[in-house]
Image (cartoon, rainbow over all chains, first blue to last red; front, side, top):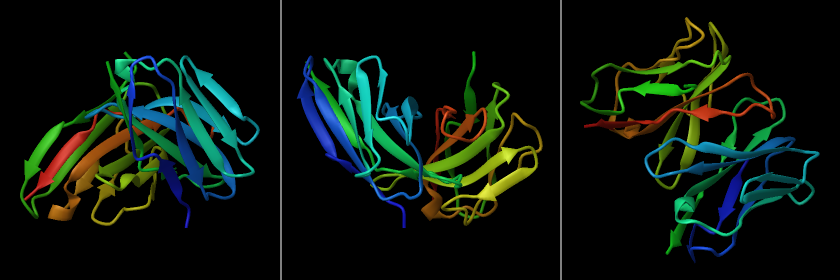
Length: 112
Length: 114
């Protein structure tokens, strides 16, 4: 069964600091990996989308990396802001499937 | 403004009373899907639709129905809701399926079945 595991489950950091969130998956064959940001009570918003051939993708202060060989991805947030407080969800799709596998998310809290 | 809308946003109902949650997108997207989100479980896909009149089951379709009679609308129907369908529901759409297409989520519908 396809699985997506995210760590840590929750994280508290101070404003201005950097942080890295992890995503490990077993989905195979791999199609793409997406990172979403979900504010409390709102729908997820896409941050990055990576295919097999891409190992880095940036979106402003967010940088995602992908190692398809080890089936690992990370999301690095630079110079965190209070508005970065949210849940970050990793989603992996299997080639030929229309049903993505979602991780349970990492809850990030940024304190002033 | 390009968006996915859902109605209602909040709904409290009783077991067995049929309900429909509407979803509409104004981006001419072909692919639409429904998800439920439960604490500790993450998002799970209920149904998806590749285009008008083309729908298929996701991970957790039991107890739900959908229809896609028009490209812009993708309602979720609970014929006989039960308490285990209490959840936060999201509709999403994308131009097409595939790794390059960004998926846009609606604001969510919080459903409570008593």
